[in-house]
Image (cartoon, rainbow, N blue to C red; front, side, top):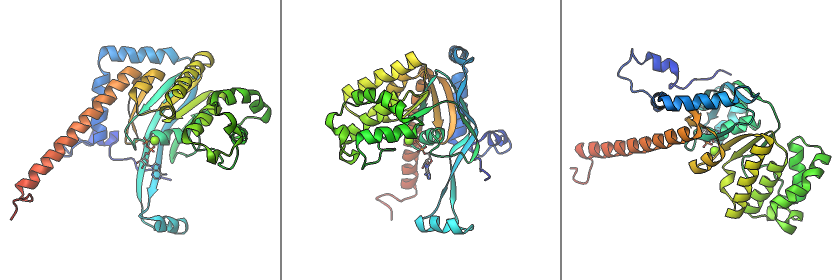
Length: 324
Ligand SMILES: Nc1ncnc2c1ncn2[C@@H]1O[C@H](COP(=O)(O)OP(=O)(O)O)[C@@H](O)[C@H]1O
Ligand SMILES: [Mg+2]
């Protein structure tokens, strides 16, 4: 399938000279700001040091010019029609746009971006829940992912049955699951509920079970989407300690999506800032967080200004209360 590169890509930046009137898109402005930010000599040195630290490690996850497009239909009826007919109109959105990105063994990377930036889509493609429209993704190692807390559980199976079920999904043999079962049970700490169907669990209990399975399944690549922010404080602390232990003792590769830049900085060495499916800035976590928070603040400021301007224009045009 051919892919439409969004109008924010490099080609457009290059043609901007010829069309000076066209305002650069939000993505090209963000890319430009990132370039300036990264140009600071101290920041450049920090980035180089981090790159050097992992340069001899094997690539665990690689994105090579990956684009993921979704077709948006007007309604479900149109979507259904499109299965049989070619000429049903649709709008195409690129959730991920020509992204290239590598994660090496032992790295811990936080994906930072607003809602809709493409974070979950990236993780879904690594776990093969979704597939790229264009480009290639390489994954070299056993992936254990906590995407959505309820995902991967059969509500009618008991907790124990679900452990075997999930283990199988993770590519483990029954004997392998038998071996790690005591650790999972101890970590989940849900008592007799282990023998009850998962549909009777609270969301906190599902989180406990999900996390217990994923962190004990001896992953080489651990992926967590927002899941660290659920559950009670003591369980969160336990999860935090376990993830740190896996990173320190087993040299796992870790990818994290979180809305909390504090959590990101606590877990990750590197941060990738995303905007509308584009990789904007890739840097050591403190620099990535600083850039990201700056970017959010500037965007909010711009939005406020735009709104105020619109309000002003509206009242000048006579659309306000006193309009005749
Ligand atoms: N199944 C889908 N169908 C259509 N659009 C989707 C689908 N999944 C994601 N998208 C769109 O892709 C973009 C990125 O979504 P997502 O990866 O979930 O962002 P994030 O996790 O950063 O909030 C959004 O614009 C979203 O609406
Ligand atoms: Mg998401």
